[in-house]
Image (cartoon, rainbow, N blue to C red):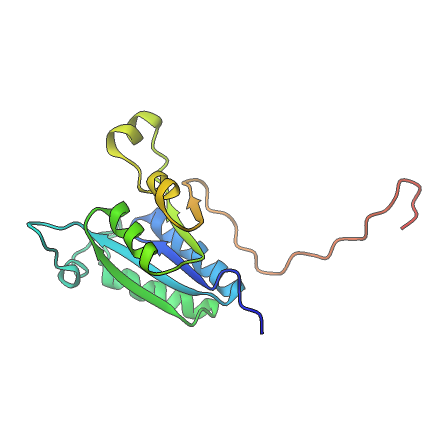
Length: 170
């Protein structure tokens, strides 16, 4: 039995629409490669501690959903796509530091993260989790950029005709 080159996929999740797109893409990849998916969210530490379970009940998304509700949606989407193993991980601290530390202790074959598409100036002022992860993470990173939603493929790609030479011979 051969193992998948993408047995473990980590997706970084903050509840934003772009993070949801990153999750959907990670789940589609996982379905294709029979991968297990870990969805990681990072809570900032306040006064030396955070309350991830409490924070997961506070509305965080643009449409007013709680993190717990969004995770339920992700589990349902995974089930529809045939992804059987989805783990939810709550991390604490600075996002990049927490994710990098997690990756150092939990091998992942791919990390999927959204990018807000900040301009160079705003990226310098605000920082960019995706940019820093690309530089620091010990795993390949797939950055999902903002843009138009891509159409979902409902059927496998059509088989292509064999390449023909200019004279018409196969």
